[in-house]
Image 1 (cartoon, rainbow, N blue to C red):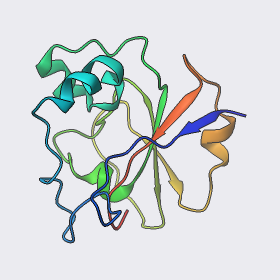
Image 2: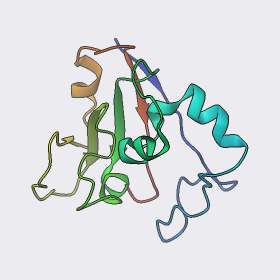
Image 3: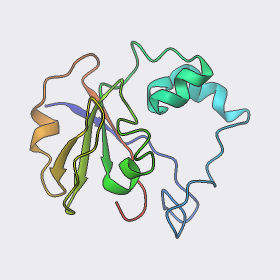
Length: 134
């Protein structure tokens, strides 16, 4: 069985996003980012990491699990936010096809079977990310 690492930023009240789904409370600049960029570069969305010149090869994770609200943040411009990882979107809502390759695997929210049994590409670990209402 694969290892699941729950690596996520949360506010003091335990939520991953603000009351209206906003992400502006989580700073992407400052002293704390050096450790994240060096040790967890693969947890940063692919396009953002590329703009920072971060190397995402050989990271800790080979897959990312997220809800539809998190996946939807970058749509339609970034249909594959973590293109360097296998992506699984857990939702109970029907999803419209999105142009872009590779597309995340959309899985019913109550089913973890696909991500648990998928062969690991590198580390065998999966990162779970999400937002309020995913």
